Image 1 (cartoon, rainbow, N blue to C red):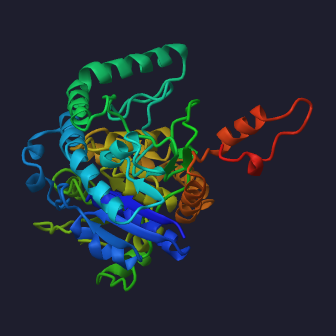
Image 2 (image 1 turned 60 degrees about the horizontal axis):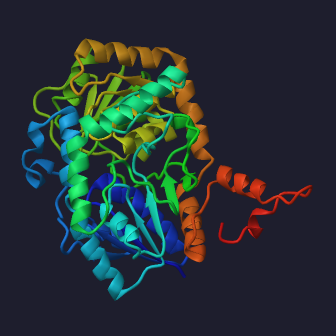
Image 3 (image 1 turned 90 degrees about the vertical axis):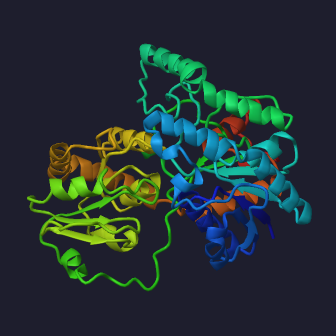
Length: 453
């Protein structure tokens, strides 16, 4: 039996994929504990994990970021992203480390698995207090690279010599100018716990990093860290007991394209995307389904619109021809897993990076704004529905994702890490290691013979 402690911020998009890994680990006979917000206690316990509450660290309700983090709502774009880096992810780190230290003293774990923004685990790892540390990502692969621009700028890669020079300059600009105050905040936080500072960036565990996507959805890079494993999408399980809305037959029996519009669970102001999309498509020969994330829409609706607070995407997406989204990673991934092309319109959190990758993969369009004009929305939806290349590329990614069982692959990799307490190399790195171990004139050593690696 392997003892795993999973640590996440109290954020829906962080804990939901973690619980799918927890479910798989429990099914394989392992002990799992989840350290996260009280809001998610029941969900952790349903999958068979024990719940560990936040004691010293700040616990909050991610349904109301404005109340949890005063001043955030006044910021837009990059300023809001920088605020989140500092106040949501860096500031709680010392107290997170304090909590983890107490939890592990009460009951040690063989592996600590954290989300990529959970700096408390990074602190304990750097201080030599974790025997094995793994990270599961909850967004695009934003790790630093000579080939890929810095995460958070929303810049596309360019692979020419001039493009790589631009990338180097962007990292200099990001570290010294754009995110200078973020780096200073992180440095002060690290010094507070006795660690040397480092630049702020998505953290990679050198032991094991689980990327919940496939290479086809990511920018090519020639310097993938050896601990990174693409495991496919960590999709939520189908919800039991789905109660369809009264108009559900309009969806399942639709004779015109069904267009879904959603803003996820964080940026839910309907004036940004939901209402503009409903107005933009009011005269189109489509059926528009809007999911509001728990809010009610005021005022009359167009005749071709259907609205619900929530519908499980596992039920809805098989009927959808295109999805309009602000670019949340979870929603975009579920859409692509169903072969649905996207129109993205979002500039907060990681949404610029998600939208860029959707466009780069040819699986949709990125409008690069939180407030797209109605005419632009209408044109984008028309284009995605009319041009079969978008659906073909979405289905290519669907097929690539379908080759994986992400929870099972994550569990198997965590088992390897627990058994060896050594870095778990990805396939390319293992092949390179085997090549280096080949005796003169002889075959490569089998991977099973490499020991700890």
